[in-house]
Amino acid sequence: MSGVEPQALPASVAPPRGRGRRSSVRGWRRGDQLIFVLAWTAGLGLCLVAGAIVIFLGVEGLRYLDPKLLVTSPSAAVDQAHSGGFLDPLIGTLTMAVLGTLIATPLAVLTAVWVVEYGRPHWLAAVVETSIEMVAGTPDIVIAIFGLAFFQLGILAPFSFRASGGGVYGRSFLAAGIMMSLLALPLTYTATRNGLRAIPRQQREASFALGKTRAATIRSVLLPSLRPDIATGATLGLGRIVGSTAIIVLLLGATLQNSPQNSVPLLGFLRGTGSTLTSYIFFNSPAGEGNAPQKAYAAAFVLLLIVLGLNWIVGRVSRIGAGAALNAGRMAR
Amino acid sequence: MSDDRPELRAPAALAPEDEVRENGTMSIKQLDFQRPQLDAMTPPPLRAVSPLTGPERMQLRDISVYYDGVPAVNGASLSIHKGEVLALIGPSGCGKTTLLRTLNRLTELTPNATHSGTITLDGDDIHELEDTKLRTRVSMVFQQPNPFPMSIFDNVAFALREQSRRRPRRRELEPLVKHALQRAGLYEEVRNNLDRPALRLSGGQQQRLCIARAIANNPEILLMDEPCSALDPRSTAVIEELILQLRSDLAVVIVTHNLQQARRVADRVAFMYLGDLVELGDAHQLFEAPREERTREYIAGAFG
Image (tube, rainbow over all chains, first blue to last red; front, side, top):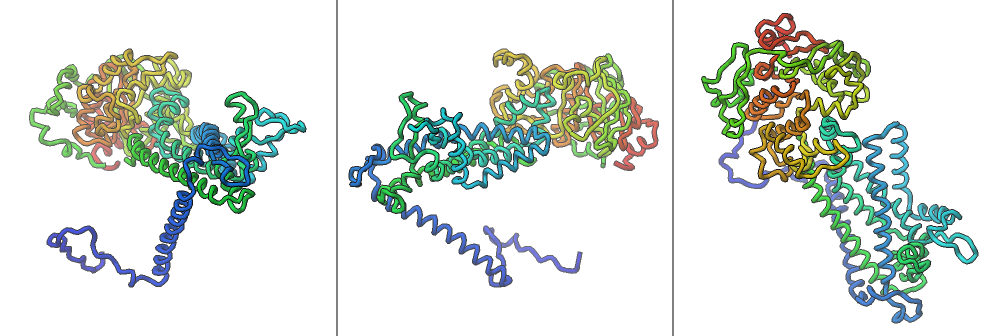
């Protein structure tokens, strides 16, 4: 030790307090001061932007949001008083969310389990990982245009329907839902993979040492403790699905009303075209043909509520997940 | 590695009436842990040094284990008998855990591990047995208590389930789970909380739950990899007492770098150093009159 005298600690006589004296920002280096100020500005600025969006949409949305809009179908009318509400887009959004998540979640979980628990040969696991990263980075308009070309293939007619000329139309809830699942898949995959990697090796060895197979270990030990991770990933994916416009415009047709393809109850609906809140907003906004900003605001407000609701669920789920992680023995011991 | 652990072990409980047997092992029967349920199952009087009491169960012939071609265990040969506690001792990195994990083929989970030599279980080469079958006959308790994130009941039931195609009902499993918990000396403490998460138990209770899980299928051999190194002295004593009880039904192989623990529980001791099985003998002989110079130095605390 050098000859520096350790400072006497008057803690025994000082009254208890939350924090001791800290160094003043004024004494910092110039560069550090600048970054300090920038960090605060950026953080506060972001709060302002987010607040502005919520307040603006809240005010505009509540001004125009009439409960009747939620339960009436849109109809073609020049007069906005007769153009109906957005029941169909609302149903479309919910259908997309359910369909996309139902397809994406099992695929993502299976892929993550394979990559982490098997992952051999290594190069193949690396290829899978890179592919998923690529899908994650692909803009949804690119996914949409690929999907359109894909679902217009003759053999994929059952996913949509044949137009009057005989060509496959390629646009339907099914086609859009499948491509939507590509948006959600990377998010669910990443969450599940990270969850699997966080489970200590000892958990697996404990199961193997009891004479369990790898499959039984995954099913009975690993998957149950992954539930919060899967839920978080799926909810994040849901948010992306609900927000995508490009896939709706290109692959769902963005028709005014949901138009089932035939009278078969569910299948006909899924093979038919329709719209979601995002496409409804786009076409009613001043940019679209409808030029009905009031309805666009009202729909946007509803969409915002849906997204905020999903975010809230993510927060809840991850907090439950943190509690479950304790039960799962993930705490560093 | 210092061996003054006994000073840590609840000295007040180590009253003078605790008998120190002539082989240096010590009876811990007198320890008062205020656990009447264990008194109800007091083990049979501890034998004097009497190794090889039961028939031979496992035999290792010239076992070597390599990681990336580098030997971690070098030509070890020994036999394991029913009714005995065999302790593997030696400094860190001497290969004792690797040797232990070879006995139930857990080393196969390490991709870069290879081995040579033969291990037989009741005459059968263990590499000819299905790994899952082998591991129900040769089960293992790990260094860190590692119960599954399930209820106490399910932890033990997990070991019992999936043996047959039909999933057994809880009513059928209940007596088996209860019996395993009783043998592990945990039942009285958890009998009203069988559905509580296992991770709410204390460390020592968790380790006893892991023992219950490991013995639920009535294995022939129980492997223990430093089962007490993450536990406090009191829990350690409880588990050591348990080991002495369990050996009447099965063979226990325990890895420890706590020499005092080896003295307390082992019938036979194998000393390993740098991958070599240096000396194998009765606990009494090995601790009191080691044949090898390296054993003598290690026991005297010259290294390790």
